[in-house]
Each structure stands twice: as structure tokens, then as C-alpha cells.
Length: 375
Figure (cartoon, one colour):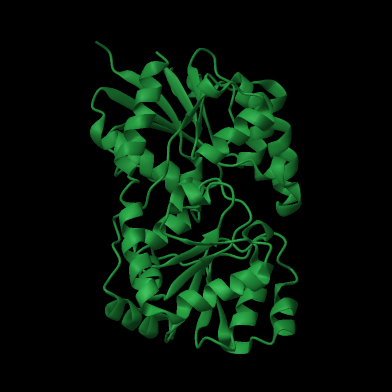
């Protein structure tokens, strides 16, 4: 019996990986390690070729060195080249990042992580809103199955795109366990040595952009700052819509109480930030999944987050929830958690228990089951 041939878009693995790239890579790693009856043929576009040497189940990697946006336009305008033919023929092609290229004969799976660009375009870059909004409905209706990373995103896909619920499969993400968190004392030592940081501090990890409620986060911290001794660490690249951030920081008079560290490239260091922080403060307006919340719980950091979108699915009863539009309530929650070690210890235990409900092995198994159901 011939193995099932899976086409898999690995373009999100190139460059500085964000949530989509981490999700795409982790599921592929698990699938290729445990599915001996499948053959994976990977496709990528863009300037950077992805190194897939560590994935034993990948038998072919076809890289098209055109900028990804140019490739998208080519596919849209001409319907060529067919993605499955580029890979020598596959049974199922999985488009892992919203865009479903044309295929000749393969069944298709499309990953959709959130629909913020449709639901709240004011929080998203016009470079995202225009192209994604124009294509996602068409791609979703053409796909044989859709993978959503939460029930909240699944509900948005059904409501906003008009997709029958039975065609949307929820596959939760997880946390990469390759870099476990060091003990808090060791984590604090690493941060002091490598980043010149001394605690105590409150942590935020994600791209800085309006959807993440950066302004509300900073205003809440400014209200709490006179009552807590902590610094606020912002870990993540500065994204779209943050041009006024320096002026906002100056107007709030926070000085050296806020440290912007940018994108942390070393994956072994990020767990240390979570392990050393007294709290993870993530009052985002909207998340398709909210991987940083799960990372924080996995590494023993108490979580303060919004009761919106998918975040309650991820955090369960382990988090202190806030209204992301209520700065005063956010400040009170931050003070409550930052100043109460007994509360933090209880939140750490609940967070660790909640985080065990998510695993990449489960995500891979569910994705493989979906592939097999289509053939």
C-alpha cells in the first residue's frame, strides 16, 4: 500500500517566527516523527529557504525563491503553478497560513488562526486587512476542511465566513518543550547577566500592536506603578500602529520602569523571562489562541489576561481575568497579583495544571486524523 502523500506549506517557518510559524513547525515535527505511513512533501516561497534536515518524514522540499506576496499574486491572477504539481503530486495539501494556492487534484486543508482583520480591522495593518479580507472567504469555501486553533476562532469562521461547522476542526496549539524554564533563581541570574535586568518585574510577551492593547496595558501599569516596585518588561518586536509609543511612554512618566527588549531570538532565554516574572500581564483585545498565555502558565508564571475571544479557553480557571477596556480594573488586578505571594503561588499551581491539557502530540494526532478522513 502506497503511503499517503501530504503537501505541507512551510513558508511560515522562515525568518523570525511568530505564533503561526511556531505552530506550523511544531505540528510538522510531531507528525514526521510519528506517522511512518505518511510521506511529507513540503513547499515554501520567499527569499529564505527553510532547513528541513531535522524532519525525517520530509521526502521532498520544493522552494520557490519568489517573494511570497508575488507568488500569491501569481496564483491569484493565473491559477498557476498548481501547488500539488510542484510537489510531484500529493493526496492532501495543507495550506498553513490563510492562503490556499490552486491545486490540480489534491484534497485541501486550510489553517485559519484568527479573523481579527475581518472582525476588528481597526486593530490590524492595512497590509493585512486588504489582501487577507479579499481572499480568506474564497479560500475557506474552496478548502475541503479548515483547521482553527480555538473554539472562538471556529465560531468566527462559521459566523463571518459562512462555513458549515462540520467543516471546521479545532486543533489547539501547545508549548515547545525543547527549552524548559530554569528555576526562578537561575532564571533571574541569566536575565541579570545577559540583559542587565534585576527584578521584580511584570512581563508582556508578544508583538507590540494595537490588537494587543498596548496602550491599555501601559496606562494600567502607570496607575499601578506607585503601589508596586516592579518594572514592566515588553518582549516582542514592535509592529504596525506603534508610531506613538515613545510619546505615550513619555506622557505617562514611566521612565526606566518600562523596558522594551524587542524580539528575543534565543528560544532558550524566553522561558527564563516567564520563570523570573512575578506576573504575566496580557490584556489583549482579541486572540485566535493566545500562545503567550499558555507559555506563561507552562513556565510557572501567574497570568492576568482578558476575558475575551479564545483566552478563557486557554487559561481556564488559572488566570485573573480583566476587562481590557477598563484601565482602573486592570491596575487593581495587577496590584493584587504583584503584591500577594500566596495568591501567586496558587495561580502558578493552577496554571501548571491547566497547561498540561495542551500538547503538540495531541495536535499532530488530530491533524493526521483530519488528513486521513479526507482520502
